[in-house]
Image (cartoon, rainbow, N blue to C red; front, side):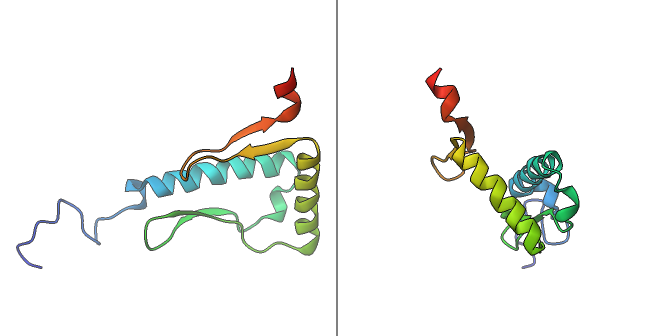
Length: 106
């Protein structure tokens, strides 16, 4: 309303660049993109992008993929899990740390 403080931001001046969610989504999308390139799947995820929802929460949009691409991705995940790779997840908002059980035994 008129006369209320806006603290310098309103709907007309808000930018996703002011959001931690945007940077988290962008960084996660970049990491996923790099892994997909190493796996030879860069052309199979044409809709991959970083995004924000209406609440400012960062999201990674994977988009639609072909059944062959989904099977290839599932096989990569099965191989990673079979080799002892796991993602340690702690508290919400905690960045997962990739570990490999074989390295822990050395």
